[in-house]
Length: 591
Image (cartoon, rainbow, N blue to C red):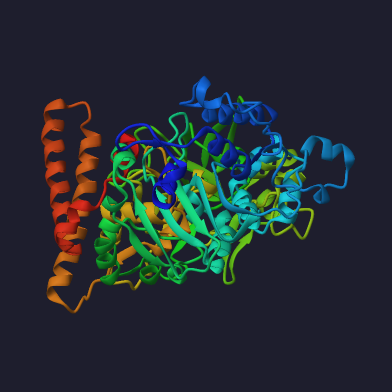
């Protein structure tokens, strides 16, 4: 406020030194009572806020400067309120519920400026901690969509309480721009055109005790065709920097895709545009059917097993202390999540590490369920095992969709998805929540599981595609597309990126003109070196106990890695901007 009066009316200030001024106590007191208001549902927080404001009022004062006022300290009970700002008394019909919720009525008041750090709370946590409030949020707020976060509705409520032309500033998780549940919030902000400025803190941790990546969301309740965006690389430098030293990028609000807001820092915009200009989306390369999720049995503990031994006809395995055998013909290869030597890795030759019972058969129409009668006749051991597990498989809580048409379909998977595609003879398997080097090529017809961030998805080229699967794998695994994945998908501590099908579909693949000799040559070189890397890693795995041989193999592997990196650098041809592309894993580990 001192700055305001220095510009507008210095006569109201007290000069304390040559170039320093302060507000007189009476003016501070008046500003506090007339301009500062707040509400919190935590009574202790309300009392702490009052106490903190009174201490701030007394800061820099002495007995001489405050003695003329009686009482010295004002009553802040009309400024700082105890109540639930998201819910009004009209929203709660039940009296007992109202006592617990403590709704607050603003009585049509509106504000010139609203600032805050709203609570970050997932829907699952609201179910547990505030079960009476959750259904009211879903009914009252458009942003309470799917698995929304509580700060979504705080933003919507804040805009309702803001005067036309008013200013709004919250610090919120950056992921609102990407997550599926945030689509209604993005629609609200985009349709109203209230966005003024977004300052992303990138991989910096603003709150030391949290692992939340945040941004400053600055809005103004006034239509604007564009907003400014920047990303802070060094938090310490930003705190002391001058406003004019910060580079911003201007983004047209209408240019945003409501599905995902791709926000690029100013210094990387040229590289981003150049990558896009020479690329097409992965979906354009593989087609709409070429990117899909894995199977969903909804009972993995029953269907999936690791064989202890096998013979010509059967696999043998153990479940809950019992030994079973099952016909090989009713199983398929499967990859089970592993952190060991068989974990999913771009360069490790991929092999399935488990089997899955597969009660389906191929027909002219696609894939159909094998009836229990047929299983009993042709696969008696499988029938015996499935019947033993009928109580769990036939449980209504298992959630089979679409719902079974007869009572004898309890042995179905929970979903019918990907049954005809997941076993393709050549495909790239992708860990949905992963960090680098998680694009393995499968030649075994392996089935994998979907299941949110814990599962896998698949990228499969059409049979007639001119692109090599190794070329696609090399690009997906590159630092260029790792960075791009971080722009599209939610990023977690350690650089883990949620790269499901929505992210994969939009990744840029440098298009190749196969009639152009230079294009075809670099495509073939990348594919060749990528394949050699996988073979070399296979040699490394086979010789892991031979230190002498391992030293040579590791050196040869690093030479090949350098080769592929140089080829990719040449392929994208970003010039000086190439060095600006961040290494996501290192960024998010360092912060």
